[in-house]
Image 1 (cartoon, one colour):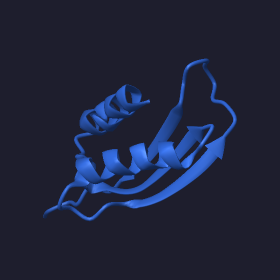
Image 2 (cartoon, helix red, strand yellow):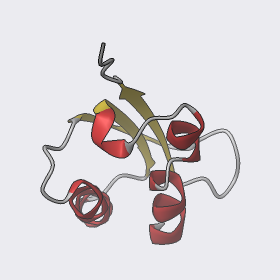
Image 3 (tube, one colour):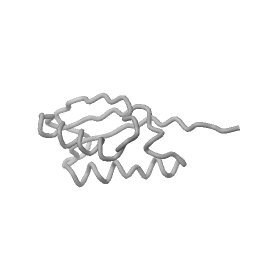
Length: 85
């Protein structure tokens, strides 16, 4: 799970949109076979990524499985880019 989580939190989709993880305002995470141990791994990874920045709002949804075998979680992030005029 840790390897998959790190890969997703690198957020290539955010980079492709010209956004940074610090511009994420909300995260929704679907976690297969949710447990306190998996929550601890997920929380630690999020805290490490946001470091001194405020963490976004986060909703965690436990699910029995995802679309593909072997997928342990899915993350949806909403980023808001600030325009400077």
